[in-house]
Amino acid sequence: MSGDLLKDLFHEAGLQEAPADLEKRVLAQLAKAAVRQPSVEAPLVPRWAWTAAIGLCTLLLLLSGAEGGQLSMPALPALRMGAISPWILGSLFCAALLFALDTALRLRSTSRVR
Amino acid sequence: MNETEAIARCLRGEAQGLVWVMRTYKHLVHTVCMRVLRHREDAEEATQDAFVKAFQNLAAFQGGSKLGTWLYSIAYRTALSKLRSRKPTTSTTDEVPAQFLAAPGEDRTEALDRKRALDLALAELPEEDSTIVTLFYLHEQSVEEIVTITGLSASNVKVKLHRSRKRMHATLQNLLKTELWTIHEP
Image 1 (cartoon, rainbow over the protein chains, first blue to last red):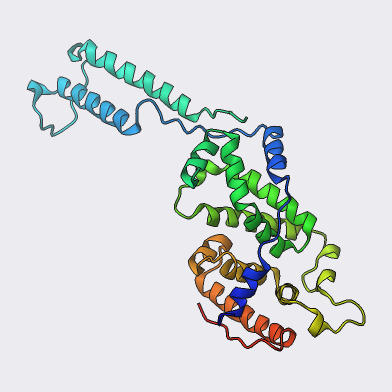
Image 2 (image 1 turned 180 degrees about the horizontal axis):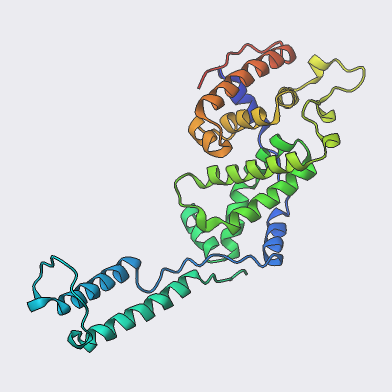
């Protein structure tokens, strides 16, 4: 017997036996409760990519409206629709649409209990 | 199958993963529930509920602690909540369970084997203390892990461990008179 009797006693006594059919009972309860396992699928486009894309589009939009296309902007320029490229508008629209779709997919939980 | 693979399988909803986790941890989780509830049927129910809760929230397991520690914390909270909801009349907090008592006319000191002596010493502790001692000695959880499981402060856990050891020491010394032993501090 080692010096630490408590540890020895605990290990001698061992564990309390759980019911043999525990696995069956838990699986049945999970199935019965129709457990909705959270989806582990990553979004198609990661969040950082969305943030970068939106940031880039916003920067392009602002630059396109700035006088002479200068990079340093002392103040936000007034938006003039005529000066904005339809490509930028289209990109922004697509980004917003895909962002909404991505968010909706991420929030939707999938249930795949077997 | 290893633990990481089992968790991944559980997250995909595969029954093999769930069964692997249960087979690995069911006795350990059940022991925690038994220490808190001291009632076989209640402990079985708590064990089952703990695994269901764990699997429902497995996505929240970040791997910051061991899977075992995370499961014990769920089992501990599930058992505590069951204990609190139990009617006071069925509470056994200060009672020594009947199976630990010696038969009438039996010389208790001699009749008690070491397992029964341990059960008796644990039964004399409050549920929380009994669970902490079990986690520390049987499950070999560190004080930090016990803090994670119970939500108590580290100093509180250490005080409870020290007090429980002293109390168990006195009980066991009385029951196991022939044993020569010392208790080591963590």
